[in-house]
Length: 115
Image (cartoon, rainbow, N blue to C red):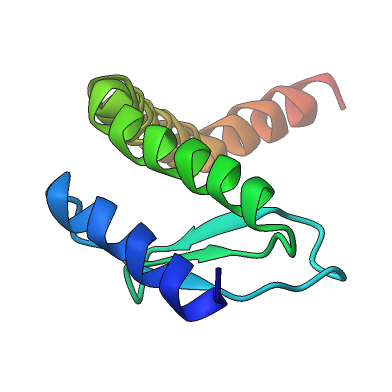
């Protein structure tokens, strides 16, 4: 089957599944990946030369796309925790930096007493 027909059938699958991506079958043997979803253009690229392998990659990428919905809660939770930890670390760093002049002052004064 021609590349264009296969690509059209893949696009039909995405449309039937309600997946708002475009598919491009762009055989490229020098590409180190079999496929990839480019989020900025919402395009699924398939790089396999062989049609059967292209369909396998297509299926893999569709499953991966749908799985993102399942794992989104974990990504959001982890990102939320990172944000909270960054705020806490920033507050602790600021408290430390505010204490630095006093640390120098106390040590200098104690050092002068001994001298």
